Length: 82
Image 1 (cartoon, helix red, strand yellow):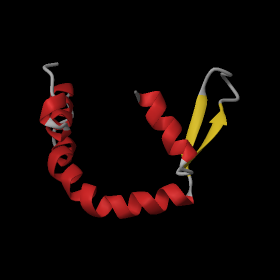
Image 2 (cartoon, one colour):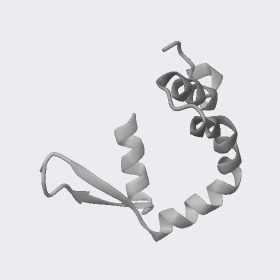
Image 3 (cartoon, rainbow, N blue to C red):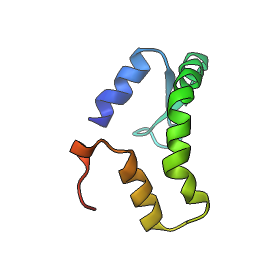
């Protein structure tokens, strides 16, 4: 559940949550310095994988290419036909 994941990230102190001043129902999330530090550590591992699988999007700008690139990042047990 995305809401629970976002709530955990907020509670761990990686992002700050703000109310949207234009729409009271909305919220704005901003990564903070703690979140930036953990992202830098994660990037060492995930960066090359993202570049390998999604880097092709700079050459192909169509919905099909995006969908295929994103599917390649998913664990096999979560893959479903689009």
